[in-house]
Image 1: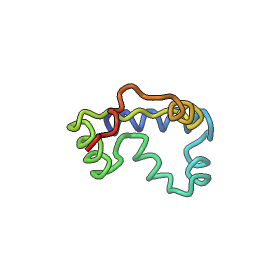
Image 2: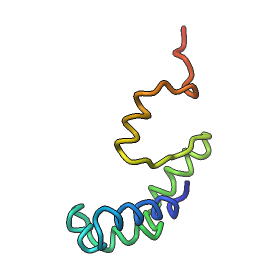
Image 3: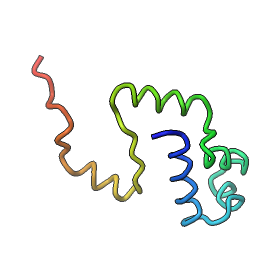
Image 4: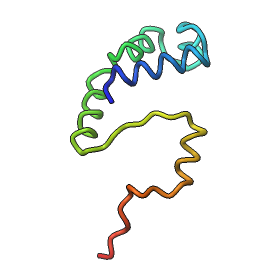
Length: 86
């Protein structure tokens, strides 16, 4: 996932749930320019670096609605290695 991918998801969810950028920014407590930057994938070097480190470690970032995330956490994950006996 790239910063642009994150921005696309943020834009879609914001438009569907909070409407206009100006209204969403006010409700979220951020500036319109910050929200716009995030939606354009200009999230800043920290986001870029974090996503790159995760990718280099072979990890994917998946954005899901919070309700779906709760369900995922409750489901055993076969990709999670068993605890070490050491």
